Length: 159
Image (tube, rainbow, N blue to C red; front, top):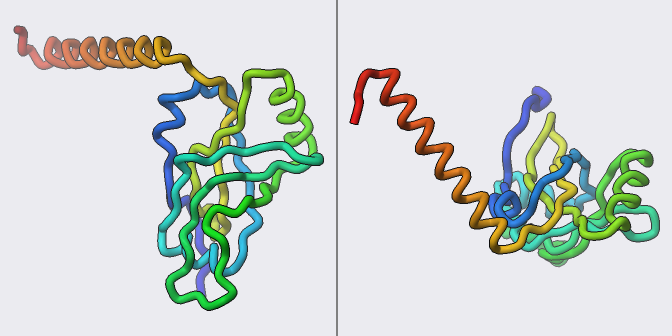
């Protein structure tokens, strides 16, 4: 059987980019059980309420929903169990320092297969206030309108 290559997306957390200012991103491996791997191969997972937490020098992923494998038996996993994340020691120490600093959290952005292994992209993020969210939306809308108008001018279609 040929070895898998490339990146295949399983789940995205689009809400995280709206609710948080992303400061830095990291790629981490996950410690999974067999039925979790099979459920992920079926492309089923949700990162919506997920977060990562540092505990005793290790980083744990909480509230990520990987549904039970339908063909599983009594060996099935709990859908929202906490899962250990695999990072280099230097990365863990850096994240510990930054999260203890205050106001920063670890949020999962994407869950994907990379060369046949399950990986998760986590972000060091700062929460946004509601007025910051509105401001970011207004900036995005203005930039989109400017790019549309520039496209019209380049194509010779003036209003």
